[in-house]
Length: 321
Image (cartoon, rainbow, N blue to C red; front, top):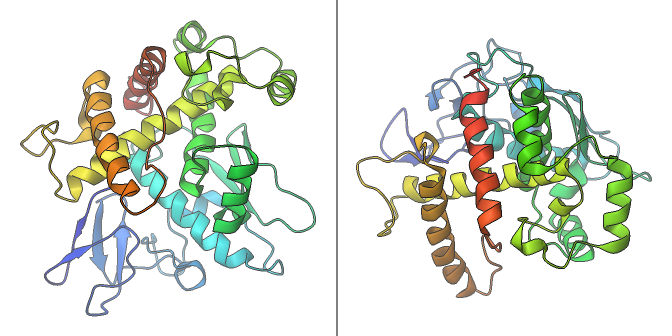
């Protein structure tokens, strides 16, 4: 994620800022990729701290308009968790916008989001025919950590959930093309395999013993749909980590010079090589504070090939190239 200029004075703004340092209200314009002073604010600004602009006063921003079901406000912490969840959604949508997904120039279908709170009934996160269902309870750090430990996952965050579930929607969009499915099946396997049976087998038996040689995560072994979603999420992780590193003005011998933009990089091998070298360094820094690794994953040759496949399709898919 970039670091943004203050439109009314010196200093910088971060992606989630609502005001400048001197208290001037600002809002983010996802089309211009810049902050503006006093534009029409999203109607959700006061309720959930949405900091995007709206097309007119009293309207929802581009991101909030995609959410058609919102949490039951009578469930404790539902609105607070919803605010955090929408913030993660805005972040991921802006990332994808760097490759033109879901922007005005993208002629395809936009995702629809159902943001649900968990009362007595758990919410099953997932995607179906363009609808992404998210449990806002996972924005609660206690809930997220508990479930991560229960499922023995090395990483689990709301941004991760958003990237994974939107990845399913991206697959659905791409599957409507005549040239995608055959190439996908050659790389990931046949997605027509029974999904329910595949997941049940995974939960009963676990991943194959050699899964690290072929997949990014154990869950990716369960079905080609999940392999795609995990791989796509990881491509977004690695690209955004690299972009944020550059935006923060940090240096590394691996980084190209001259205003290099990771989202404009066509060579996946180069992008992944740079990202991997940066994550090793940042992992080391995190350990100095007793924190978990930023990116606790190993990139096998097969996983890199899958990342290359996803990168190619995401860079051109929204434009029909």
